[in-house]
Image (tube, rainbow, N blue to C red; front, top):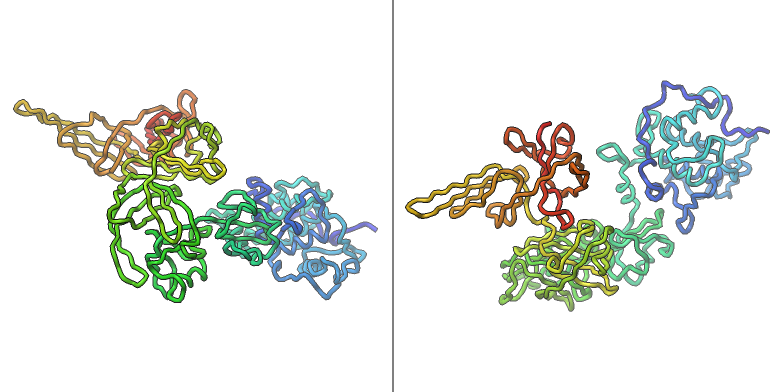
Length: 627
């Protein structure tokens, strides 16, 4: 007997007038890993007991039917058991019986004319496409002619075919199924709705799939890594993919007091190790209802009820205590532990020294000399120091936490040199740790965290490095630079210059007045006894914008093309563009702040750089003149 997947008289060519506009191709811009993450997060395709997707294996009709139910709005409501036998060859004891029963009842699939289902038969692409088009709301009445030509026409028009290699009558692999269900999520339903939204998920503001939101929704936790943490995770962690601080890692790399999130469907653990130790200074809005806490001069949102309780007036911590906050994936407080139970060292540069108010454990207020530093993690922290401390802005310090207190000490300079390789993983013979923290600082105490890629291909001399540290593996994990990148300066255009010699009676009296625009804001600097010998145009401003230490002209170069990260000059050389490059339009000697998007076409472009790119320089200002 000829096998028929759907009643033959109800199948085939799609009425052309009913075709919706094709949706954006889903799988053409994402990797298999990303597709797998999304489908696992939605609990559609989760792999075997070890999380393996076995993408080269074929898919049976029973397996594809389960995938279809998992991808349907009823996915969460179908249990793993039933008392009904939907077909003679799918008795109620069959693992797929509840899914086949649900799919048949919903009209997503039919059996064969002989009254059987053939659960172990490999599903063909035409069979799979038919089920997926039914998920999109299309029924038999939408088709005429011979099956499956109509379904296949719709399949191509909706871009459901992206990434799929199987032909119409060919058996599908699990890879084909993964692509088909991923493409389904962004396809339009018969009523014109993006399918993902029928499952209760929203799109981004631009109407695209929000993969990050989907993966976030599948996360559980957090738990704190301690002796019995694995019992709190609802799948065997030995089978998990592990990420730590955003990088691929392993179970062996996880450490005590790491904050752990997980997804059973994705077979994934995410661990975060950020900690903050310091005085518990304040809680807001009240100690009976904590929502945020201030420790070491910085305020953190409280993420978990356990942390809120610990910091409340019912918990074990009070203002004035030395505590360690364990921070979760969004920087919120996941847990609080006594400062004495965690040790560590933070490195950075003093940005200011002042007197600050504190509350001791008895509720009494007091004032203490306080240093504020910018740490190599890019954050700002404050710590009380002795009244006789000689620390000042611009000093390198380390904050060592041990025994429940934080000790602040001045760092001695240590230096390395060498060329940074193209991958930015090594300086000369010194390997950079995967989690290296790099800070660029100047003598005034201004500092900014930068990332290894910023140094790619650049040579560092010993005078460019103020401090470095190696971890236990001999890799550089802390690096503090000596005002190397130029990123700490401000860049804009000098719009007005007045330099006057007011000499009289044989006395020389030079007077200079300079007006400059930085980011659309106008500043004026006046020199009563001197001039800078400058003219209008792009400039670099060192120090305060109100009272700069130095103003200097930038070097121009004509450009033939430009995007947000690089430009090509008239000689064909590629130049890096500063991530905060200022763009101005110049017409009739008037500068007007603009944007890269506006000036890409119809303008002659000139870039201005502070120093050679080989030494860390980049285009800081772009000036566009009408073509």
